[in-house]
Image 1 (cartoon, rainbow, N blue to C red):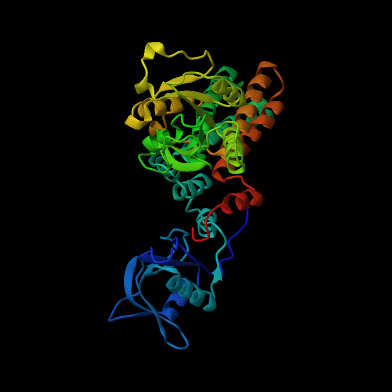
Image 2 (cartoon, helix red, strand yellow):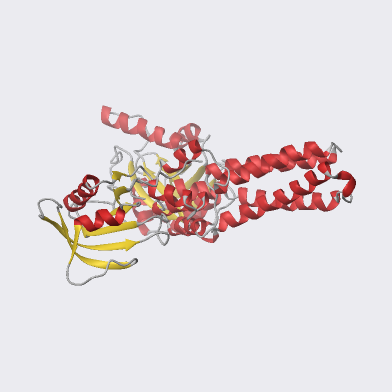
Length: 458
């Protein structure tokens, strides 16, 4: 496992910087020289003691020219009571691009180096402040796109997954110790209770599978769902998007072919972030711009996780609808029958296709709740993310899958009455896989892969 170079002090801007929009910008330092660098740059006003976990008020000055760079607050957090378990200093400057960049440059000139992506959190992990699941929870919380995603990330930071995985790993270690003891001291110990051991393995395997079952939910919470609204021109696709998003993202007119390109909107449905794509009406195009729009519509439909095939209830199921259905039928599909307020339900003839049917009147905001319910039920397992407080990511799921395979092999080894030495092979494999989840047994390349996805200041 890589070790912290304690002599290095790192610095980075820790807040998003947007011109004329941020009121406060933070520059963060971590390392043995953090306090010394801060004292070189920061002039307090009055008698303010430099005490840990206290806020100081003053000016940031250029150490050579004594020019005032910013009026700011300084927070000092001495080791080990800090995020990284090193000395940490934060300059709370005025927001905007220039102040924080000037302060960061002063820190670098005073001896700090620019932090790598995720290096503050990497130091927190390497110094025992966080385990690997908690570190990944930090990244998930920063990138959360819904309250439910934030809830799941916070559960990770609080160690819910880590506790479950460590309990499983400890149980596997205890079984391994029992087996190895019988190998080394067979004559001095009572026979192994294989029935009790198989029960322990069965319980562990069930728990692994239970945790692993959250992987799909975790993917949805982190990556979201990509939904494409497709259909013939003038069936109400843009009206549906506007009613659903409660906005006027798409232009709505009575003229067919108004939408010439894909219009995107970001929504949250049942706790899942949803990227909705309103596509151009698909028909035999009459001009080059429309041809491009139709091609992009079909491309969006093929790349979507779910297609909302929208038809006009007044026109019913047409030959053009059938042709479009043939082009998207290989995708997960919901049939949206729009403008239902303009026809008698008994007069509506619909085809027998493998898709849920939802009836809407987008212009009157009718049927939107039913549409969202259909989308959630179309997601594998009928996800209700609001009740989810633990969801493993792709890396964790891969390690859990290895654990599941190893424990299943141990069970088969026992059933086949193979010698105890064979049991230990797969027990060790399960223990190693579980250790990879929490970081108790992890390679430097895995750490690089995980922390490279962080922002620089975290």
